[in-house]
Length: 371
Image 1 (cartoon, rainbow, N blue to C red):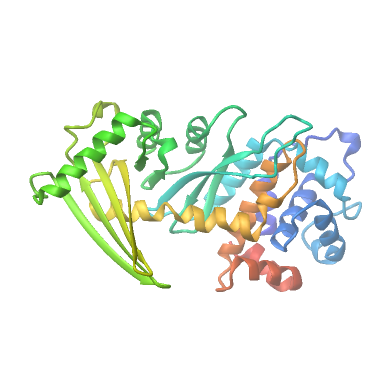
Image 2: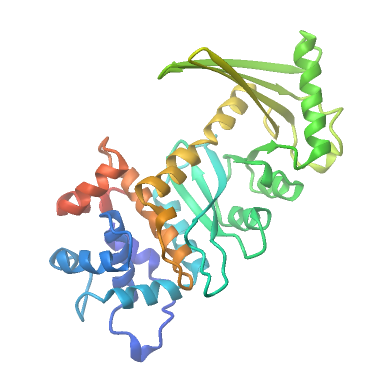
């Protein structure tokens, strides 16, 4: 896979002037990826990994002038154009990932809390990522612009992805008519959360289900129902999912391209005898309640499979990488490392795989070549 990664990233434009190129851009980038897979969390750790594993790295890299210094690595990564690096990442994912029909693609954002730069008067970066729940892979990411939000970033990310046959799930921030139309134009379905930030819409959906569920006549209300119960770790959770294809009470329903139903997920949790109930409402282009229930639940895979791993295993929130484009570029490298580690077939956790990759050259090769 080292060769494949080199091929994918070969289109990247080197930001340096020619006379300052002591180390090849691909050598620096592949070194960084290998080091992050093996547990490196900063520039000095990447340099140290390179020095310790130079003989191994020379199987794949030229390294004409040896291992670059941590200052050199930091300068180069900070100057790479993030949009181009993300395009390379997405192109690589599309080569290695086989998304089946009905794959749930969860779109969600995450802020790298310590990436703010007071001196440069820049706030912490906020990345919007796409997560394939069944495949367990990050499909791509894009940074929200300063003084902007996810509404502008989501369409840009969708444009980069191959979504035909997938079900795209987005939290309330992405519940926008333009975003729904964009998803439908890519021959995909959508499940969009509706919350109080769209008061009239939320009230219409909430009021409808209050009446429909209480009526006891699901046929009259065009209401489909699906219930699941899970138990474990002292908790019992019952999820009741409702889907209705009746849109008569929805304001401006014709503005939502592809809209076919409204949904409700009611989660009843019993923990140590205490019961709590949470209700979430949705707009969707689906007409089958089981498909809706699966998509609504699968959306949260982006939290456990990506954001939690970035925070806990890769310690992204503790990272003080701040200069130039480095925070968002390092996020892309982390997500690439997560994909490679997840594709490695052993049943070890991501944390244990990183530890083993740091110690074992053969295992590290297996991670890099596993895709």
